[in-house]
Image (cartoon, rainbow, N blue to C red; front, top):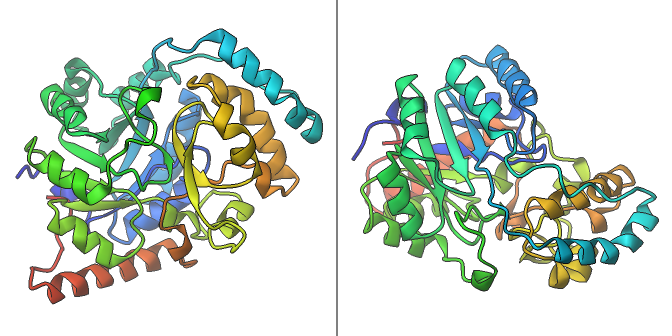
Length: 361
């Protein structure tokens, strides 16, 4: 087993990078200082915005951390379907008294500029979502001392990441909140995601890279189960979303345990790519008609989602959440790391295994 990531954290608990505001320097610093691995999400930010957050995080902690990048997306969307969806959303624009966003704001999420910054001023770990970078890109990070991880949702994606030279895999089960990190957005595979424990076993038998388990994890017992399936660390997003250090809107945090929201679904309603969120009015009304058009739909609905948040309307927000959202515990991030580590150690001990310490191995 590769030891490429061993010294990044004392306990094998990773705070997921949550684009859109949930991940922020105070949250990442609190997790890293507690012995876990904090993450910043560069997705949807400008290159300068990413750099400013890295600077803020370095001022808050001297511990290792990670930065997550979105891969540039191919031009696959049919403009006609986007225009039809815009017409469908006209009532939302009128209701929130805000214009729809411009769908032509670019496909690459400022990829080249972000790479340039991260290679010029390296961070300990960079992870990738929505695809696998080329071997040349991964090699360039290795040359400056940065470790790399690729989000995968199938054994085939895991093989591609291994061939490209990645140091580790973030193995994302279908239970995960937010976007599914598939390398290719195929509408014909909507709903065909693989559960985390099955996926871990499939990936473990397909490649020889350390695995970070992600998807619906909220308790130490689940982390122990992921270890039993071959993972070396667990990545949690929804669990950290309710922490006071999280940058998520208060209404989003409250909605995770609000009895009004009873379940989650994968939907294209907010971004044009499958993403798991709490089922609310917007998701119910627009999900069945949203086209496979990412990031165009994300740009179109962005003003609507912001307006809903400003007016305190949870029914119009993208309430990203994993399947375990009702298990969320509101506590400081450092305390949550401590509690999760203790729960994991107790669960592993009950199974007769060694204590899960020493970071990602």
